[in-house]
Image (tube, rainbow, N blue to C red):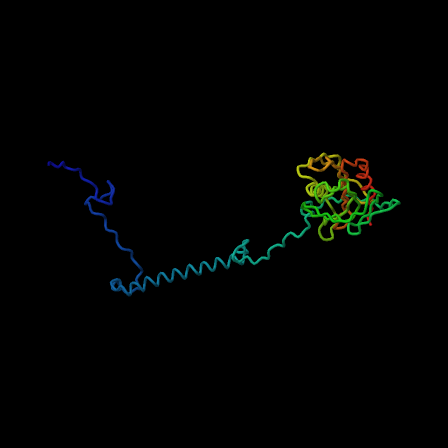
Length: 298
């Protein structure tokens, strides 16, 4: 076989155009280390050479450590070393938010509401008194009876209603459950410590939302009627009135008139009056207005 002459190629490891004129790579001199001042004889002694290398490395390490200590010292003195969560962060963590739920959701207004001078006379006639809530209100006759239970809402505020009046409108509408018309009172922590200013609109809306999800069939529809600020018994208050529409097997009532009065008593605890009248007993709808108007602080 006849071999064809191959063109010349660059030596392995060198790209074309980078080879020297002689075709041999340039010689790179070995790194020079500082000598101990004793001439070149020690460079041939590996023991002495290694000692000099260790001495140089040790000196460099000491210099790095000293520089690091200086940087840390300066940072501590200037306060830059105590970043949040850092190694030197010795600052005490802020306290957790211990405010009542309603105070967190409804911070007090920057401008307190005006409180009219003096109170209001207590209307004559029988009264229901709730010493824990700090209010009294009109007591009604038959078929209304004293309330003998405690309802706790399942909403955000967990208000307990255990004073008031009621009567059963539909007994045993489902096994073991009666349906009621109610006039109930309760109270809720609304301000911080000894604070006495309350955001009535925000707080009233939250209480109404809690009542709606706690005491009524699911998928109910709300029909707003009114929401206004007023004075009850000489104290700032908010009255919310609405009708809830719903449908539940076994229940004749298809809607219910609800009024909720929130009364600012000038204390950390705000008073609540909750009135509910099913549409099967509309003759008592007037109580949704009359009972809140009869509220007086104790």
